Length: 230
Image 1 (spheres, one colour):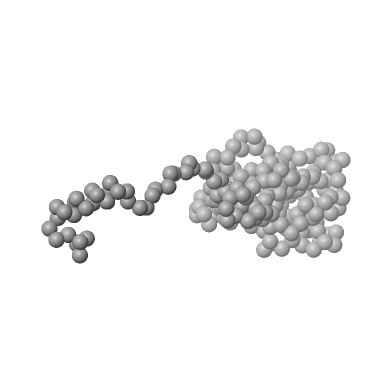
Image 2: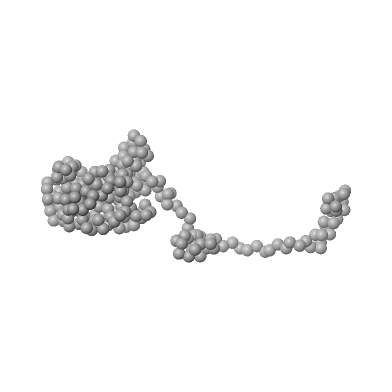
């Protein structure tokens, strides 16, 4: 099962007010675990960055001046996303910005129904508790000491660990491993079983020996009207 952890950084809070993306990052998961494939791009917004947004992610107009605009990376981003399910912390916010960029370029929007919102997951699992990424890292003992500023790729990496804990932790991936050569397992089935060899036991003879028959007869002779004699 392929999923994509997705995160963005922006110039402000509202794309309807003209704010734009300044970073987008995505991490590929297969069966809930990172594969090592990542997508990350800084983006030139061609507009000012709100001071409160810059205080969050630390990205400046000078740093972004030589970075590509969204139109230059959109095809590569869409190819990386494919048709995978999206895992996003506060999905409505990120998708609103992405879809504003897609719309401006004539691309179809990403439906909210395609995303799993980990904020909502956390609120259902821990009602009344803080659901920020930092709070969830602390809850699950995930080291985020290096997160002095927000960053789309760093946040996506942390979210991949948080998401795994929200769905049950690594225990949810425990499975029996069986070797394909085991009896009853079809070759190419993808199932592996470890079969432990055991030493064989000497076959036991079913027929009684002459000595055993004699001992049995002697025992019957001591019994009064034994059943075996009827």
